[in-house]
Length: 63
Image 1: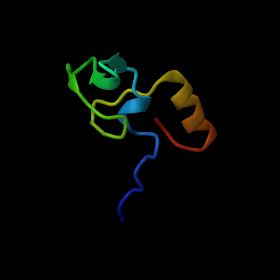
Image 2: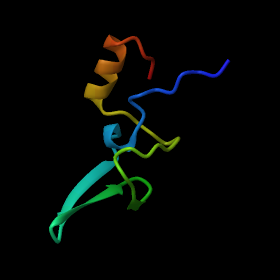
Image 3: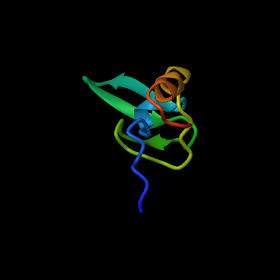
């Protein structure tokens, strides 16, 4: 049986996620990996922000 994917596990909830306004648009970067990303992307190096960890615990997810 496959484990249900964690709905919190996306780049936008990671401590390494950065968003910058550039030329009328927004650029998203993973500060750890050093390349462009999107808020909905997923990588195995994900480290959730503290408020995300609290929300996950409140909803019964383990970090």
